[in-house]
Image 1: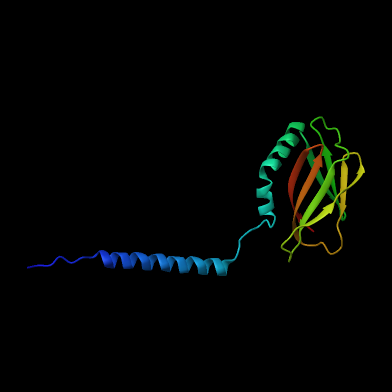
Image 2 (image 1 turned 90 degrees about the horizontal axis):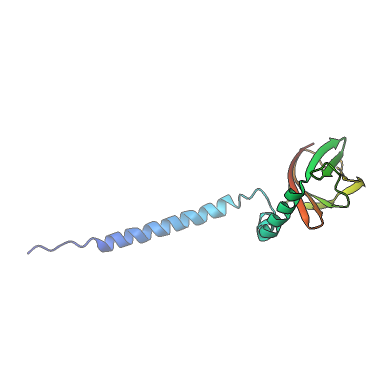
Length: 150
């Protein structure tokens, strides 16, 4: 009489071994690689996504545009509406992502004349820096990403 060889237990053991092997490999990759996040503020942006989208739509409806200039060690931003008129009394901030720091540094912009906002760079701010520019006025908000090479 011939007996039929049952291969299911071997298959189940192989399946469990593969699962455990890939789980260990995945855990080791997560430990070694670390987070590959380029924007340290990404989580808070995700939490504020819907309100940010509404603010961007409001700014787009207003037709805001920002012109950026670097004059010596001073960053100058000109904020205007769709008719080219300056947007006055907006709250402006610049978020600098400095080298060696995981968090951004929020600094206010100064309005020197209607629609013109400035930020003075310190002597220690050199090299390549990522920055985010943000203006808010009467519920509308506009954001711009900047790459500064000083």
